[in-house]
Length: 539
Image (cartoon, rainbow, N blue to C red; front, side, top):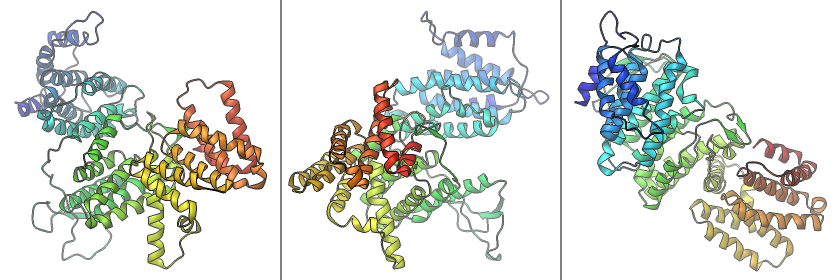
């Protein structure tokens, strides 16, 4: 039935007039429009979604290819058939936009009129699917929904260009996609591996540069395949991603596919995304998706965590928590994943070094690119392990900063950060606090307190860090540390400013007193270390 409906509404109205006519006075259009007007009615009118499906099907099949009607039909199918209906509706919308783009209604010159119904669907449907979570019986339909919605989003960007609904500041189809993805990731249904293309060189050819590659079915023996010509850089990247997916499906501990996917997603970057006060315009990760991954960690489902984290990476390449999830899963899955895990760390380290400050940015909805645990994972695990690997392979000296971590306070602090990266903040604080209690020298006590405060700050607990940092700053003033130990004073001021700025994000209208405090701290930091002040101001 679903296949018949999709085929039925995707056929041209006629050979001479494939999109039919724009509807004005039509009984079916009047009926469907009347029902849609009831959506969100203040009088509590009930929408007859069955009539929406009937009238929408009749219009798209016999009268007009209208994007508004296709969207209304999609909503009607969700309301009457749940996630199975939504999956069908999304495929119908994709088919109509793809096949009839030049002639469908509204006409092409009214590009914003075409985008409006999709924004309407996002605004109405996202809250519905957020409030009504699917059950286990919906698993297959939800996964199908996620797939069809991903195709729909790609099609919108390709057809609408700069006017794509995915770039709207209004309710965004990407928000709906994230909710559906968060549900799909929860289900343990093993999808049948899709056929993928593998790069292969015909035996009679030499390895010479070319824009043509040969392909073979993932399920067939190696053959010379069929030549595929790349039409753009993007098409070449897409082919590499398909090859990476194929390699990973066949051998999940193979490091090569993880390297390939990060080359495609990270290497083309030339600069940090534009940001205001650290917040970019990149659509954010939904909290439901974050929680779904945390649930997999809590239940120690490492194989699923790895598979789903890597599957989400192409859609969220700047959500660096995913890299920490992947690293954790590979660690738990055993020694066979060590080479792949090292690739993750190497590529992550390269990106952080290319773009200082990238870990401090946020998505549009305030979700950080990297949460506190991820920042500590990068600092305590990623950068040191990559530096050590480079040193061992080249015979070079490890940097002074890395070597210092092996001695005294720095070594203990590094261990505490590793503990936090594993999700145990309380244990890490207890470790540092124990050394603070046992410290006899006042300077050592100061250093332990500073590292305790910075640990709280980096773990995302700015409220806990603030009183400690304020107390330390009082001692900086009391003992004139700006003059006698300027590096230590800079560390305190920089951390205190970071803390104040994080807490200020939750305040709609900062008071003049608070702004005066922040300006005074910033002025002091500028006098001591203008580079640190500049870096902090741009973060």
